[in-house]
Image 1 (tube, rainbow, N blue to C red):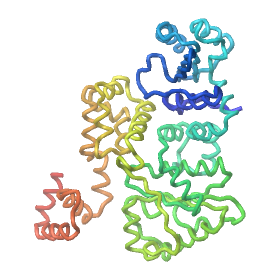
Image 2: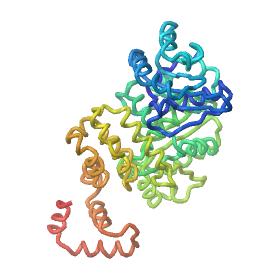
Image 3: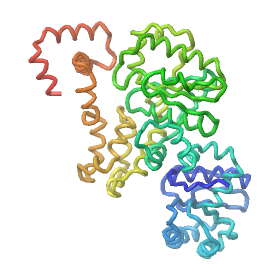
Length: 451
């Protein structure tokens, strides 16, 4: 039987899992409702004289006392108004016969019997019987202790000091989107995939999720390239199911000079992987670095194979649609160490709307601003505005990269570009750069300092 503790699921994640399990078990379609005050109803099934209500309660393992108190003080009065013909309670709290009897007494006569009180072990049992639902909710599977221990021991995760809780927290915040399915389809078809995107967009996390799926679900052995492709020479085995992982394969912040013929060797390895059904190859890079590599290396500009890209994009039609943005923000808040008053500050008057709709929305800024040590530099009353200001002018997050990871010419170019319209012709940019070059270095650095 499956054995999950559900700590890595948010309340909304747990609700959706329970809905899918109960729909299969009961053979009915449950009405679902948006997140928010539910008036005692998470899911509902109505037909003729039947009025079935389902309520989900996600608590820590030690949360039985809190669960009992909520049911007695809040849910029972709602049931007196709703008068359902049947009421099913699903909870992540472990149950004993005595606990079920205690809750059935509170929920009587709406719960038909103790079987309508579905505890953690009951959910595990349902997951064992409905493997396809377990697969569909892969974050539940991915963050289980057994899977994480196997994946960590495979060397998939690059953090040298990684441990179970740290990895679980990172993956708990992950929100599946179309990029996962697209990358997986790319791996199935061509056997290799380059995950490219702007900084802070989640390239490495997506790659790690893909790797975990290959290692634990499909039986691949993982090998991470730390520096160069020569590391794979001794481990490659054409008869074994192997996945090779190269994070930031063109450099972390700028295009690094590749070793002699390294570009050609990369393409040749992709060709070799494409022709072997036992191999997979996952690479990550920043999109602008890849574009730069195409200009500098002929093997990338005119590859001999179909140079597929899985690009994580932002925007209403991209991978991070508004619902996805909302779930990312929700997960970061839910699994954060933020004090309660800071969390409530984002909920008050729907303050979170300004974050979700901001043109500069970026998961890295969300992560930065939901860390307690960052947020508490200001009071809870101005926290929401501080969050929006960080999106509006994210200098605190990007200042180090701007000053120390770009060349002097790169900084100058970026400053000039920032003064121009969003859509600018290359010749106009060149003209403005030439104009800047005619200004003294001293004057220019004054401008840089002002920035």
